Every structure is written in C-alpha cells, then in structure tokens.
Amino acid sequence: MSKEVFTFIQEFKPFYLATIKDLGPKVRPMGFAMEYHGKIYFGIGTHKQVYRQMVDNPLVEIAATGKDGDWLRLTGLAVFDDDPELYDSAVEVFPMLKEMYPADGPNKMGFYHLKDATALFYDIKGEIKKTVKL
Image 1: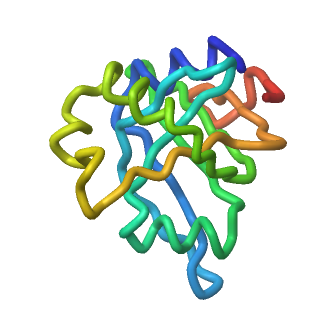
Image 2: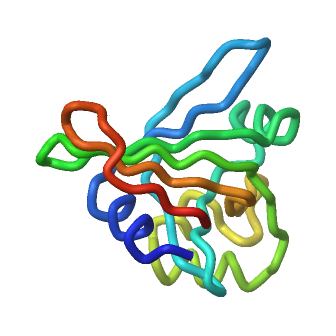
C-alpha cells in the first residue's frame, strides 16, 4: 500500500469511481476508503448496479482532485474480499456504515481492493508528476 495514495484519497473527498457498463463509462462519487492489512479497501453496496458492473468487469479507475489542482488517477482490478473482520474495521472508520448496512440487514457492503494497480499523480497542467505501483 502507498501511504501517499491513501492520504490523497482520504484528504480530497469525494473521490470518483469509474466502471464500465455496455462498453461505456459510469462514474459516481464515493467517500469510503480505509487501510486494512496493508491495502487500501473501498466499499460498495452489493445490491447496487455499480457492484454488478465491477463483478462483470473488474477494471476500474478512481480519481481525486486536490485543492491546488493536482490530481490522482488510480487504476486496477477490483478484487472483492469476504473477510468478516472487514465490516467491523469499516464501522470503526466510518460509523455511519452501521446504520446504512447493519450486519443483520438485507443490504450488505462489498469490500474490495485494487490488484495490479497504478497510481498516477498529475499536476494542474495534466503532466504526470509521479507514478506509484500498488
């Protein structure tokens, strides 16, 4: 995991998740990310279309923009993880999840990290400042 990537995503919310559906991009704002066992984990409701899009095509991209105009593009393959401790850790980080996705409720949170991921840090002009492999 790269602390620099995680810090950027945490500091500049919302960040945006892009998936592919029917050969077209679908983008939506997101806000949940946490560090867990050395990886950056994200979460999405398993009842949502975005979850099905990621299962069908796990190639995703996350983008975030800093206040000075610098920005980040993080690309990789979404790998879902069913470790039951993820939920408990997520609730500690973001207590609101317990209300949104109660452990015994009908809707579940799917947790994923990115495999074979590359983070590109750009300046305001769109030039790559740094590349980080995760």
